[in-house]
Image (cartoon, rainbow, N blue to C red; front, side):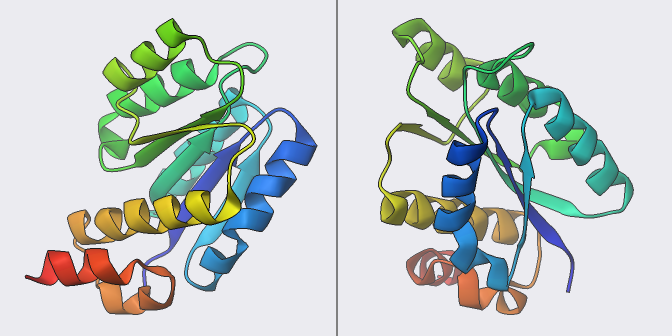
Length: 157
């Protein structure tokens, strides 16, 4: 079974802990990493890629020191190594222009405003990761306990 990772990025520890708690049920099949800055996330992604691991999903806050979440997700989107990585922006302070930039340049799949609903974030993550598993050519049965059943059925048609 290949190692598949989820990376959560937020400069506020309490927010990061809340995201990790909401995604905890996915830890039965996926490794969940947390980073407190965009640069930390990029360094982790380099390390995971060098070890041959997959990065299925990155969930990032927007307003962070030094590099914003939109800048981080844009950089990830432009890196051919992470072409299949799904991206989510989770923020309470993005402007309309930030949101447009996230969609157009970072190619985000989902956008959540703070505060979010745990069940909605978890379901979105499951769907995005399920698509990643199929698009990466991984055996979905290895991760089935944490995947979205409807997406599996749709992809097997």
